[in-house]
Length: 125
Image (cartoon, rainbow, N blue to C red; front, side):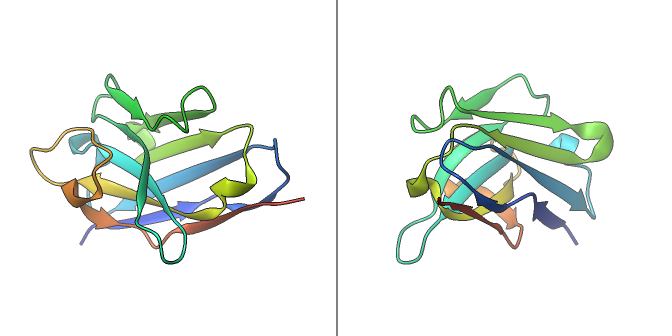
């Protein structure tokens, strides 16, 4: 049973930073592309970033480019999302997910099979 657990969310002021972590159990993450998504109530889940199994291929949503950094430590079975210069409109629940078999890095949530429970990020003064 694949389980993903996100952590690192919280309350941060506009312009601040957070680092989210996604730890897996029941599998080794080095076989999977991993994506980070976010969602607010009554809106579709939005892809933020993804990273290929080797870490060579990385994709960012336009809104995240230049401010967010995704990385992975396969030895620790963990993927990170460093978020800098956060904006109030980025308040959301952030999720990590493993891509379906044979799918690479994508911001399309339909290509992901296993999801964590999410961690709340609130950007507010």
